[in-house]
Length: 200
Image 1 (cartoon, rainbow, N blue to C red):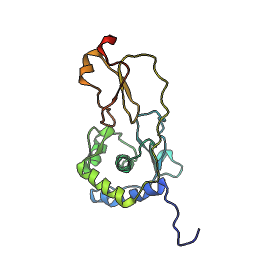
Image 2: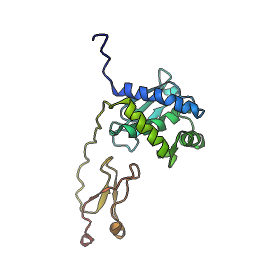
Image 3: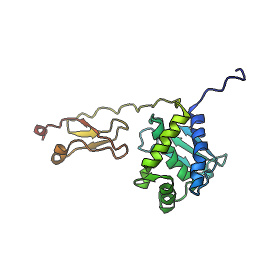
Image 4: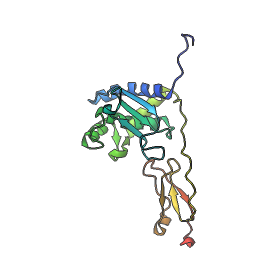
């Protein structure tokens, strides 16, 4: 490759550049980001897990670095950066303390909100991440979708998330409320099966 041409951008270089850009943001809030490796790949709980990101502690890595994985099912660069910030909070703590008070203190200071297990970017942080995604340019990644599960041979009403496949059975007394929201993606789930009262 001629010297004038740059190497093609990969998912990992895009993510590592994002980490570099986020270092001053964390530092300004009193937190030092350690060196990390970041990849798009499946978490230890597998492809069908609800886990969207995972940070591995330095103790479990031969290179003594935190390794962060973001599931390939995410395609929106801002969502990926949002997940990255959550996992970087774990890296600051070297994955100690789970989602406890130490995690919460750092998470809130960098702009995450909500339940800590699924803490996500608040309005100000989301705007910052949207700007960062624009500066980083297109992410060389396309979301990978899970293979559909075998069809259940029942017409009993259920609701399923179009993004992650999370599925719940519906009780007759709640059908009038319509499909619930996915607890992970906060989007309305789709109706599956027979939602007609005559089924019961």
